[in-house]
Image 1 (cartoon, rainbow, N blue to C red):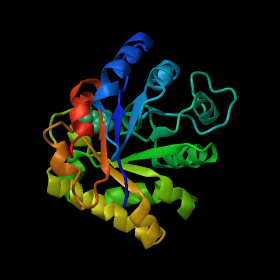
Image 2: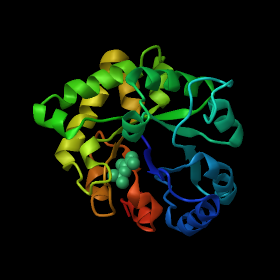
Image 3: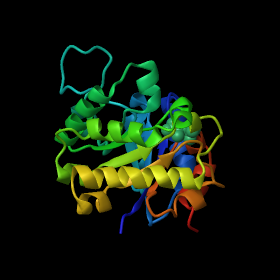
Length: 249
Ligand code: PEP
């Protein structure tokens, strides 16, 4: 039985002091023993957020990392830095990073390999554009993204990973994929993992849906057989996130 995982993606929001305030506000609202709760926060907020979340069920994650251990890469954050700070999860390959920061399936793969090397759990994002959906190539596109992302990743590593299916047209737009659309793609991702690895790995890996998840859409989405929780942007900055985490109460 897979435990649900619901992660907030704060994106480029919240100064360090605001981050502490938000963790303190959400702390009592996001208690749900059936769910792993993760707040993925901007790099500068990681340490104060970890302090503020001490003694709670909230785990602090990062929104990105570089694929090298250290060196002359001005402005980047290494996985060793994240691990040392106490981070467990890191979002890799969010569509905003692919669109604005030239991330490719190949760099996503390098980042995933590096994250595992440092004991971090990647939340691996994939998703199609509206044009690709209209062209009828959604499943082909996602399968390609998954196959490249998991190059040289062992079955044991893959089983511990999290995949976030995020249709690009649903991110920050208020347009949620229908439950049937989300379940169809998440099921196809699980089948693709079974093809690359085996049935056990596919049964163990957790697959989230992301894209304008709200307190009203979460309950139906998160009970689908292949949807193991969500990656939540806008709504993760509001008390509503507590309702999303408690989708089953
Ligand atoms: C995201 O940033 O991953 C996301 C899904 O954003 P939103 O929930 O705002 O659509």
